[in-house]
Length: 166
Image (cartoon, one colour):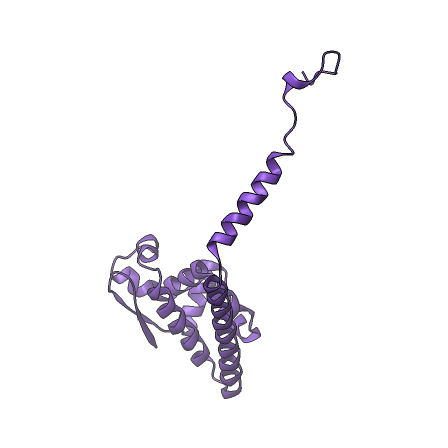
């Protein structure tokens, strides 16, 4: 059982159980047991909307008792709240499996996914840090200037006797 806090400062308890997995299947058509194949962890890591839908489905009994709708829950999920919910979901999902071998393998998949995401973030950060805005603007203006020379002639410059487009 893990907890996370949404952007309305509500603390949610996330518990991946058989009941929760069945509820996610019924509400979203997503089988959390596919996490064992490794692709679902990547999908949840890359799609924050899907992740929040899964988290809401797992937390639905608690949300119902607090009278928090799916829409209200979604409005309170952004930034750090999604990051916390993601970590809570993925860690609890790994802990759900009874086999120590399955848990160890899933932890390796989760670690590899996190490492890949961190490397991608680092590469983006480095690229943005080395970006020369003045050079980008100059290139864009040069490209726009070369395109303007290729504009078709106006109809006033077409000599008489030439075929008309009308």
